[in-house]
Image 1 (tube, rainbow, N blue to C red):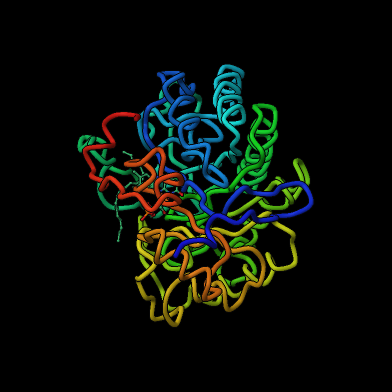
Image 2 (image 1 turned 135 degrees about the vertical axis):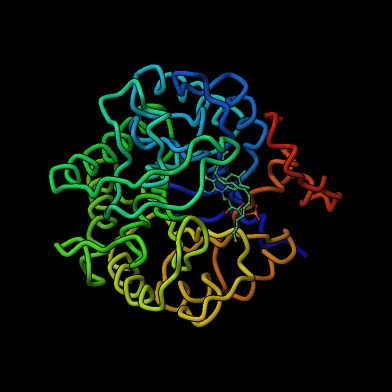
Length: 350
Ligand code: FNR
Ligand code: 8K6
């Protein structure tokens, strides 16, 4: 029984989704060398237009946001034009698509932005992340530069400009990538934020950058077209800290007062429990945030549908199964078997 997945869902006065199944943001590293989306990407997204909403793979807002090869951007006119081909294809197929806006912060690598004027990854504090870029072992992560006030102001302006570019490119809205240990999330956790100014040390200060980005983008394109993804449970590119909970209590309380299109959890497996959150990330967010919530993380259509019935969240995002099944929604609706996902599928865009 997965009927509730196929009901339309009213996000707000401007956006109604045709069903409750979202395609989760999935980085595919398939843009061209200028980080322009290709026709193959337009075809890939259009094949998935039956989703209630597609959230694009994370899209970098400016050159020094880049931490992986061939991730698309939204800061040049060629990139905006390339995305217009994608959004036209999705709309033509009856779908809706948001752009996920991304800055990787300390997970960026200068290798990817050699041609720009930046030479260092930026982060809240000069604390490096261990390891190297996936599948590029020669690129070990470096100690980032702690951002100055001027750089913070510029980052907020660049996020807002990228959101405006997304609307110009025909996206129905944007999801701010505040999850998975990237720049915004780096401000929200004690392990990566050691600042002693008004961006660090207290929940209010640590939430300041995230809220400035949310407010900057909302002012530019409307809060009805602005969404946010967060990872209150540190699990990826990030070490957890028991005191992180208070930061998210504050942040989510502030977000409750803003009319965002939705809030989305960033997690690979929502069965994970976090001691400082008192259980699952989704249960924690639901307990302190009452507006539209998107759940994700190793759900099947059946377990996701049950979670919606049990009021754990309102919308279900599906990631890896959507890579394996472009027609995921039709298959589930018809009760057909799904193709199992495997990591080898990441090598090509089907
Ligand atoms: C991801 N995920 C992810 N998340 C995000 O916020 N932005 C991104 O660009 C990506 N990219 C990405 C690439 C690949 C290959 C995977 C497998 C995952 C996380 C994704 O959105 C989702 O949260 C997880 O995949 C869990 O959902 P599923 O796959 O269990 O349905
Ligand atoms: C080469 C591009 C990679 C882009 C970014 C996103 C991540 C992909 C990851 C794959 C899958 C699994 C990882 C699980 C992590 C969970 C930790 C508990």
